[in-house]
Length: 390
Length: 159
Image 1: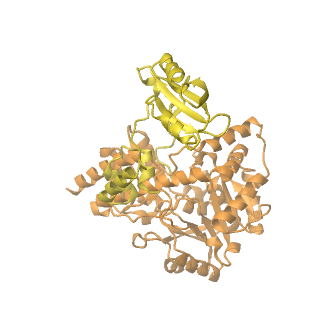
Image 2: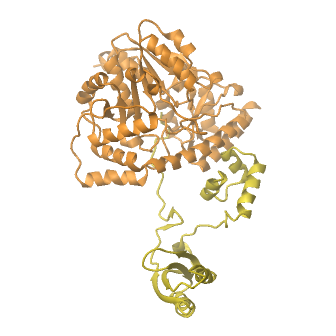
Image 3: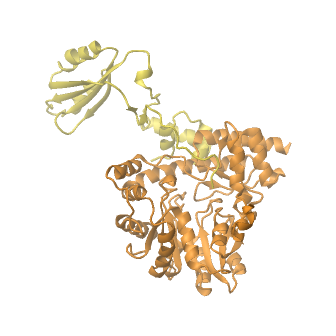
C-alpha cells in the first residue's frame, strides 16, 4: 500500500523544514559550537523548577480548567496589564496553551475560512506559513528588508492587502532577525488594520528581551486595537522555560470562546505542573529574567561587533537573542556559507532561507550560548570569512 | 553602577578587548574605568574561587559567633577592626540577633583554629563569649556551586 496518496494534499505540499535538514547534519558531527539554537542556554531558574516539583509532591496531576488554572490566568492578567498596559478579564479573555505555537494554531483555526489570506512579515519564525496552510488559509508574505533593519513597514504591508485579507501575524522582537518596531510605524500599521478590518495576531514571546533601554510596545495597547488583536505570549524565552510548554492567548471573549472550542477538543488543557511552575515564574521570576537579559545584552554587544569587524554586516538588534548578518560579501549562498562553515570550522548557524526566501544572503546566529563559546565561534568564523575571501 | 563591574564580577580574567566588546566601549575607556574602580576601592581584589575539598593542603574553617561589650566612643567598630586585622580572619561582620560579630577563620588544623580562638580572640578586652562552629563540607563558594550542573540538554539546532 502506498500511503502517499492518502496524505492530505495540503499537508503533503508543505515543504520539509530547512532547519530539520540542517539539524541532522549538525547532529552527525562532533565538537560543534552551535549558534543555531532558538532557546535559552540558561536553566530554568531553580525556584521555578522547585515549584514544579512541589506541584507533583502535592499531587497536582489531574486536568485543570480548559482555560487554565484560575490563579495563573489572574497572574497573567496582572502581568499583561503591568508590563504591556492592556487589560484582559482572566475569566473570559485569557486561555493558557501549550506554548505560543499552540496559541497561534488556535487563533488561525478559529479565524480562517478556506481561502482567507493571512499576512505575515518575512523572514519570520518557521511555523508561520505552515500554520496558515494547516488552517486552510492562504499565507501572504510581506517582505522586510535589511535596509530597514527588518522592520515591517506599513508601506510594504499595504501593497499586499487584498479584499481577501483577514489576519495579520506579527512577531516583534523578531525571530530570526532581532528586529523591533518603532511606535510610529506600529501606529501606521494599526491604522491600516482598522481600515481593512484585519485581525492582528501579535506574538510577543521575546518582549522581555529588549536592550539598550528600548521600550517594547504592543500593538494591542494602541487606541482601538485591543478589540482586534490576539495578544500571544508565553514563558519559554524570558523565563527559560521552553520545555515546560506554557504560552497564552489574550483576546476579546468571542474570539477566546472560538479558540477555546479548538483547544478543548484538541488539547483539553496545558500541563498542570507546568502551569504551577508558571505561577511561580510570574510571582518571583522577575530578578532572574533581568539577570539573564543582562547576559544576553553583553553577548549581543560582543557578537555584533565581532561580525561587523570580520566583514559580515549586521545591524545592532534591540531584541530577542538573534543576529541576522549579511553574508553576500563572501560570494556564497546562505546554505553554502553555513555548510562550509560547519564542515571546516565546526560552527553551526542557520541559513537565512529557513525563515523564508527573503532570508537569502543572511544567516541566523543565536547568542543564546555562553560567551566563552561565542568567543571561540567568532574567532573561527573570522578565519573562515578571511579564507573564503582569498 | 559602572557597567564594567558586573562583567568583571562574572569573569575577572576577561581580557580588555573582550570587556570592550561586551560593554560597547573602547578599550582605552575600559582601562580607564577599571583604574577608577580600583583607585576608589570599589574593586578590592581579584581572587580565584577554590573548592577547598580539592586542595591537597589541609584547611579547617570555622564560623565564630562573638559577643562583645561595646566600648564608649568606639562602639563595635574599633574592636571589630582589631579582630579583622588577624590574618587568620577571612571575614568579619557585625550581625543583628543573638550575638554581635560573625568571624570566619581559616587555619591548617583544628588545633590551630582552636588556638586562635582561645588565645587571641577570647582574650581581647570586651569579648564576652564565643561559640565556634567548624565547617564540615562545602556545597557552594562565592556563589559558585561546587557540584557543577551540566547545561540544559538542547537540540543541536532548533527554530
